Amino acid sequence: MKLVGIAGSIADESYNRKLLKFIATHFRSQVDIELLDINDIPMFNEDDDQSDGDAIQYIAQKIEAADGVIIATPEHNHTVPAALKSLIEWLSFSIHPLDGKPVMIVGASYYSQGSSRAQLHLRQILEAPGVGAITFPGNEVLLGNVKEAFDEKGNLKDQGTIDFIHTTLNKFIKFVKVINHVDEEADDAFEAEDLDATHPVDTTVTNVEMKAKDWVEQAAVKTNAVEGSAYVKLDRGLLTVDQLNYFFNTMPMELTFVDDNNQFIYYNKTMEGKDMLASRTPDQVGDRMTDVHPPRAIPNVKRVIHSLRTGKTDLVSMAVPGNNETKHIMHYYHAMHDADGNYRGVNEWVLDLYPIVASYLKQTGKKLVDDPNNQVDANAGASQGSASSKDDADKKPDVDANSGASEH
Amino acid sequence: MKKFVAIVGSNSKSSTNRKLLQYMQNHFKKEAQIELIEIKDLPIFKKSKEKTVPERAKEMAKKVEKADGVIIGTPEYDHSVPAVLLSALAWLSYGQHPFVDKPVMITGASYGSLGSSRAQAQLRQVLDSPEIKARIMPSSEFLLAHSLQAFDDNGNLNDKEAAKQLDGLFQDFLKFVEISGKLNNATAANKQKAADFNWEDNK
Image (cartoon, each protein chain N blue to C red):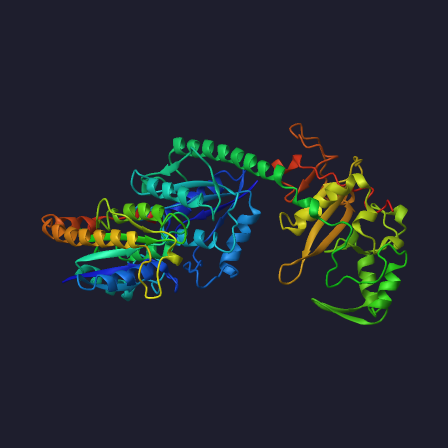
């Protein structure tokens, strides 16, 4: 699970930032909390929409990608600081990244009140229709007398307080799961992913039958594609097309390029399809995603591509069914983007991790032993996004990786 | 004649809250002199070790200090007071306390049907905080709903009922200012209390 933490203060020294930092560090084994800074957020002004500016986009995208948000608010003049309010106004004007997002409010203050009024205002603000956040109900973390609360290392001194925050955080994590689950049930947006490749993009070669066995040759003619000794300028380097081929064809993995129109347009052909970890054949290049997957795999292919296209995750990785003690074949799907951050397709690579592990063991003299506490089903384990994240382990987007592009 | 300042709680060029205050400035010109104060050029409120306050905020504080009363026109953003107004009020209570015991009348205009009711309720709490401690006129609320359609070409209120209510409230405010002027025995002490208060929790 991934959360972002926003300290609602731009003061040079902020106890609320300190509190968030403590929570992020102390509970890091449980949840990944990234702290965001709001110092660069300009004052909200409806006449001067800066929603597309870097400062607001940075925070909006982080919130968008997170499962939930923790806001730590100070109290000033019985309410939230202007800087925090300004941020929320930006996030409820042209863009609405907090919409439907689970939010937990915490607050630290010098007095025993611990920002109670500000927290109440913040709840009202977050629940306003334009903001649309889903605030975690019934649990208040009010840290009073904050000056005495931390030791010199930035840790909370009082174990009772730590335990209370721990309990509340655990409840919030459950709350986040429930809320996001509700959203997912309703979210069938991935269904719209067009595996028939009927939405040409600027690089799509038109008027060539995608299923044609000689798609590459036909498309090359259409585009006057260079080949052989022609030079291509790259970022960063200059190679001939031949050199590019030498290069790709000696990569220690099988590479596949699927463009943003879900058309399979390249693989590094190093051997015959039958000898590959995930079979591809020369005549398949140019095919639509629909043509290279069996029908039963289609929903999950859609899910994977959709989560890459929408930025829900940049990387989906999965182990192939049937791996054993001397073979651990992995499929990785990485989103590709242009310089402006627009989605441009999937870079898929397939490789057997076992030889790498074996070589490591040999060089270091170590050996592999079973972990009695391990509950991961290693053979089927497929995780979206961060492979380390425990709660993602049960999301198994069972794309039939083995059959991959092989079923024509 | 009484002198009032009216704070435009918005940084938008087309604010209907400004329009409402302009209407009041014009409509009540025989009873009071109302000066509009714009807050849009103030920087976002930020505490510093040196307690620096922008010059503009100091000038504004002087105007508030000198005025017999203050009118605040607040829009409503996300069910609450706009950041720009919160920021201005924070500057006007940071190392300077011109609002202590100052009579304040709140008005608010909104495009929708609620006329900034929630923002006004929060604004009352803000104005009652230790470093502001204004005297908010009790039992008075002026909410101008559907504010885009509320004014005619001359900037007058279309709704006669609303105009009448505002007339009444303004008369009450004049009285409130008068009475308030007599309730000044504790003002010096109150000012000192505001100055001594320290929102260390806001760090």
